[in-house]
Image (tube, protein in one colour):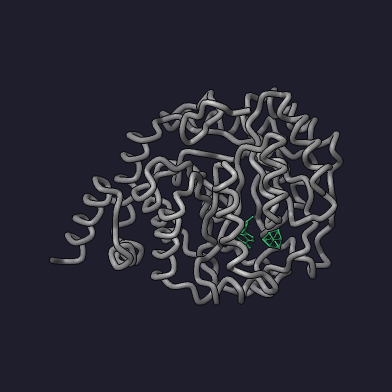
Length: 351
Ligand code: 5AD
Ligand code: SF4
Ligand code: FES
């Protein structure tokens, strides 16, 4: 069979059975000519499994202080150029209250690995936000199991922690001082504690192969991940990977589409990094399998200071701007903004 026919047959089979082998995934990840066909199949599966509603999650970037030193990230502790900040509890809760006013049903509390935010401090914030009847997603990095359990007991619903790559050597090379086994442990603990678990890949780490990306997808299937955030590496000049090649946008897009085919019920965001690379990139990804957008609800200059990579979008916009912008763009695509909390499955007790 010619490559074209072979890819078409694989895509049809994946859309029907939601299964592919590592070798089949490698073939599709590597077939640039199959990008549009993959996106169309993923868009149909997205429609059939999770519908046309797009879930908006309001992102609060509450501290850019981080004890880790990831080689690609602007928040790494050795980057002296980052102007560090930490919002206080009252400000964080107030941002969540305003997000509720804009019609968000979920807030994502995201930060570097900042030890100031101890269990008592975070649990008080979580409890206050829960009084607003919002779902809470945490994205604070690696913590001991007991801390995850305490956040869950205080009302946190979901947790985002990208594995970045399932290749242990590559992971430990670019996340120095961190252990892949511990990251994997965190994801399993979160799963056992009843969180909806989000993870994902950083596409374009130097040395990353298509086989590694294929194994990432199979790992997410085995973990039964609820959410999958995928983005291309955007080299940050203030980090050791500053002169690396940027991640390949079309490859990242194929990865999103394959994730939709293999994990049909998952919540998959069109990430900010996609739009930093390509104007209207989030629409393109929403039409290639994704069903979630996470507009920023942080206010003022903090948006600019939370700089993982250069060229971040919306740094001069307000939370109201982003809410209206995304609402309009979603409608223009013939989709709609979902009005529920956007859990992956219906749950009887949501605290
Ligand atoms: N380019 C793209 N994504 C990045 N991240 C961190 N630095 C970069 C970068 N330079 C991603 C990582 C991390 C998430 C919060 O941001 O995947 O998990
Ligand atoms: Fe810290 Fe996360 Fe950036 Fe790593 S990727 S330096 S853990 S904020
Ligand atoms: Fe921020 Fe469009 S999403 S202005």
